[in-house]
Image 1 (cartoon, rainbow, N blue to C red):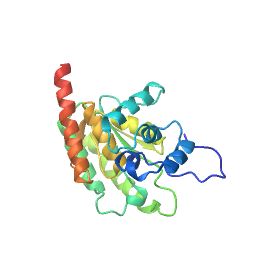
Image 2: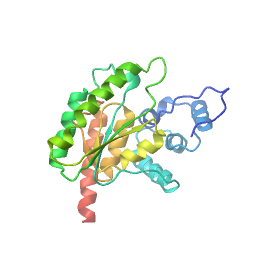
Image 3: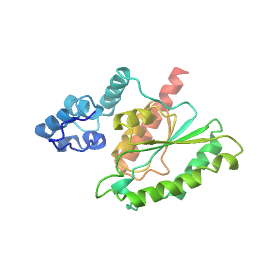
Image 4: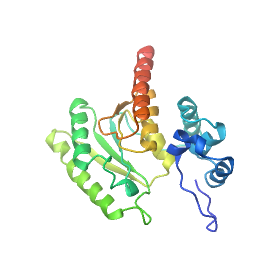
Length: 232
């Protein structure tokens, strides 16, 4: 997705900020992102509007992006868990591995059809500020807590990881998730908003974000339920 020219410093891809804080990006910054990520969902949003939090527009752009590509999507029986690690690992807002595992267990008990858990996290494990050791310790602790859940619940539950996949592909994966757990960050919140609007069961007990985003996710869940009833 990014440019291959090693002489040009590639800015971080920040789809969450592009949508939530759109007014902070100048025309010159937008042009720079367009150069590095020309075919991305985030740049499509920057190009389409100068207004923030236009969720219907974002949803339409995601659908257009999906229609032009073939990428993996979750099954109807997948629980997707988005983790924002790396430079955020030391933040007290990040739920502990024990909290995430407890939430996952509760969801598995309520939805006995779930047979797969997928952990999604990006390339925040690299660089000086990545806190790689702490991040890997967190992941290891979470895996150790999640792996026995199948035996405890007397059913087969597969545990998979999506590590450092193209961020737009991860975003599309989450928005198509029927069961979704959020943690922190704009990426997580936006994916939860779109998943909920599509009728997904977005679980907020682990989400640690601004109140206005929490309210939008709750509203999106109401929209999703209304659309499911209309389609029934």
